[in-house]
Each structure stands twice: as structure tokens, then as C-alpha cells.
Length: 187
Image (cartoon, rainbow, N blue to C red):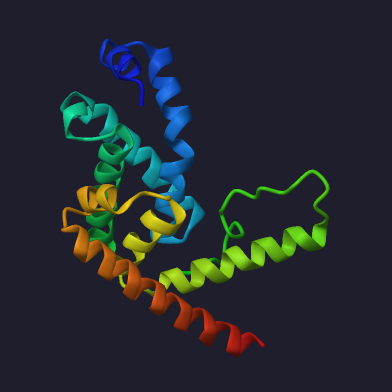
């Protein structure tokens, strides 16, 4: 993230804030969606996170790491707090309303069958992710879906790199088992 953009945001420049939002909204939304599994909740959480980012932007220190790492840490903390607050209200995560909630990236010539298959794969992945423990889910999402490196994930999660690697490894193994089970039930 351009330090000049951060400076302009802090100076109250609306166009800079819009640019910061445009550059990061999809990433934050995807993180929220992967964490909660519901499009409407992911949208609400994304908005809450950007309000928090707006309020906390002065605390960002480029010497401590990349802006997206800082943003991800703020988002992750908000998601964990949300998870703890709503744990009692949650029954089971579902993908019932609004489809899969992941932005479809259809190619120019991609037909309806390919689009349906793509959506089904995303729904299957989300259903499997929902069954992982929050610790494993967030590590796998940050590494495999957000494409962050181990060091960035360790900073975001506030745990040693070895713990990150262990959670990712265990999460991937569990994800594979869950996917196999789900596919076995539908096949």
C-alpha cells in the first residue's frame, strides 16, 4: 500500500479513502465470507471492519509490516470478536440464502453449465471450511485463499510461524477428509 495514500487518508481526503476501499474491499469481504459463510453477514462484517480501519488508521506503522498485513490483523481480530459474541446465537452455518456469495469469475465464453459447476465447487469448499475449527479455518483461508505468506499470517494471528504451519497442515488434512466425506454423501 502506498504510504502517500495512507497520508492522504489521514489528512481527510475522501478520494484517498475511496481508493483504499476499492483496493481492499474484495479481499476483506472474501476473508469475512470464508470466516462466516453467509453473504449478508460477510457484507455487514466488511463494513464494520472498514469503520474500524477508519477509526484505527492512525495506529498503522509501516515499520511494523505491510498495510495489508495490518488490515488483515484488524479484520481477523474483529472476526474473532464477532465469533465470540455470536457463538451462543449460532446454530449451524448454512449457505441457504443468496447462493454461494462468492463473486463469480466467469470467463467470457463460460456457459451456464460451467458456471453452475463452479458455484457448486465453491459451495462444497465453503461447507467443508465451515466444519473446521476457527483456528484451522482462518490459517487455511489466509494461506490458501488470501495467498499470504507464513510470516504475514503469524503477525495477523499473533502466533509463531511454526504454529501457523501446523494449523495450515492440520487444516488442509481435515479439509480433505471433510470434502471426501461430503462428496461421498452426495455421490
